[in-house]
Length: 402
Image 1 (tube, rainbow, N blue to C red):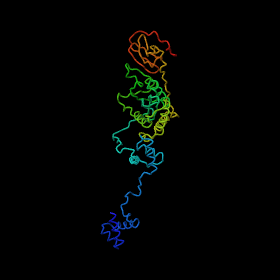
Image 2 (cartoon, rainbow, N blue to C red):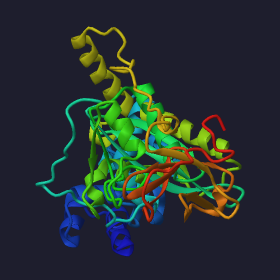
Image 3 (cartoon, helix red, strand yellow):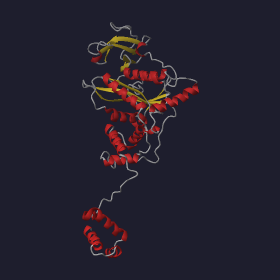
């Protein structure tokens, strides 16, 4: 192609033929012939070769400073998708021109996202949520917090259904009744008493499926504070979809795979992330607002309607459950767990575990059953083999003050 153009240029320059004549012979327009002459004059034979067809400018091309910010945001937060990155970049740089599609193309060019990785939402999909804060909390426990001593801690988590605001993220060495209920009481004291709490059917949450059914401390706290405790259907995790989605964000963004030096260090790091989640992290389900913005704004409207001046104060005082201290009435006896983990009531021996040796155990005696409690935790319920009144109410070393 360059040789053909060179012969045409020489025909005009050396042979003295006109541009119109040579253009007609070669089969190009006069404008093209003039362009070849200009290129030859500017660059010689090399100027007649094929150049780049790339346009000199592209009005919608992403500026370098924004592209760098996009790639850095993805590097710092690998779980963030194009939409989240676009929102954050617009907020940080004070611009509104960064779109989800442009961020997606940027990530594709950099090889940081799979071309077929996006999921399309169903057209008939609809999000369900309560109409105001503290109408419903979803609560659950989640594990996977590795400590330096090799143990794994768990966390009691809770989110407000309306605002996705995290009301609880309390770590505990073991999933036991007392730390779970301590976390619940702390959340009620800090953020107010919700109308309803939705949980799964775990033993720390409900005794409905015990044999016989028993009111555990979590149920009792809900009842004494006027909270309607709702339970999911067995094997139906989607019922608590918001708390499960919170767990997914927690695992991805907080990175539960790391090792913490102690439970206290892990709790400090978790508190820091929850603060970021509540107050700084834009939430797609909230039109990119933060959970705190919706939680406090909606509560402020409710409090103004009720005449309260403080939108953060709990709506009503929290009733502190008496827990394990109110066990001095009829039917209760106390025992000290033996070194072999055995508790004896009226010659009936029941094991509550060797690790409980030396602990005080409160036993609720009914006509047919014995319920063994250590602190706020129901250890065991067994059928009573004997009959009649238990004469010895307090075994040595297990008095109410001990």
